[in-house]
Image 1 (cartoon, rainbow, N blue to C red):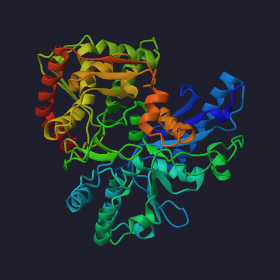
Image 2: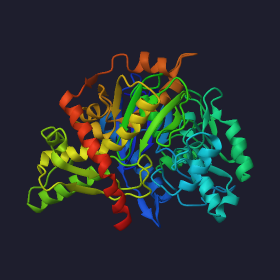
Image 3: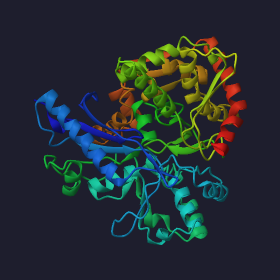
Image 4: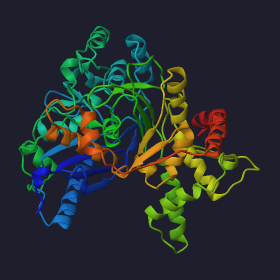
Length: 518
């Protein structure tokens, strides 16, 4: 028999999958559930409908319950704690009665350029287009009617937390993607709050969620919240709920990268590198300053596009196999194609691709067009084709990281990788190492990613010792005996990526032209 009170549930609403992970007292995943979904481009805006959010969350939890039942023969009626995470940033405004005022505008949108530029100049602090404050100010600049009725502005994670607990709060890491944070006070930067009030006449403290650091209770599962998550009625209310976090914070937690001078790369639909710094950095359009779940400053290089183009090509290969009467398992196909990339030329043999499904702030593109191109004399093999797409998925990230390491002299001694890009052992890891020229480690839990990190944050809230920091908790209680593999790409891989990236930079004009003519 399992003691449900000695488990913690982490849920993350990612770009292509909603996933729930249940961990035990040893911080090991023991059950999971998931639900696949995808964003839609509706009237020029990347969004998910709230119906899809609700259905996906409930189906994910239903699948988790089924997994617990199959493995342990028991009904999942309670847990020790719950934590919810989701894609950072975006825009979800509500009126005083809780009515949604505009479609959910996700991180993927690049429609707030004017607002982001003006706020960056006003604050002396980089405000990326996907941040909630940029979306709010752009709506004000656009004269959108709903702005005057906003009583609560939140993110997807903040919305789910609100539905589960009734509390309008969020973790400091998630809040740092809404509005700049003062890491000393663990709250929104007051000087910038006042500057925005003078600029736009909006008191942000009246409409933004309250900020909480990791480890602080953020409410309990209400009766309405329990019924929302589990419409069957089996889930009991009263469960403690941790501060909700964004996928950046859960990624840092899942890879034990919350201590100063540690770093990680999350690579899935989007990819981003997080380096915990000793102090805030200068203003760079390509680099965000966010925080760890306990409030330390983090330099973040965020790219909107990573694996979507790879997924599209793999789907095409799967369709071809089915046409030929030999259907393949999609997971096995991904594995074999990733492994095939290792046989390719280090510089991809004259092939080039841009994986831009959407705009990309690092390379200053407001829209994206997936493009594949090759020289007439290129070595057009399957191995080079796959390697090209893997390197393309990391190229924009590398451009941003170069600013961090060269202009700001931030050292990268080692990175931890997690997310779908690293599921095939040794492949994504080797490509990232070639990109950054440093060792890359992948933990055995890397495939669990964000929901596992959110579960760990719930465990920290529930089981930490008095005065124990998040970094110490992770070091001593979670990862002390964790299995991890570390890989350093060889010199030919590093040089090959450098050659590829030089061609990539020069060919960016092709991608820009594609957005104009296609």
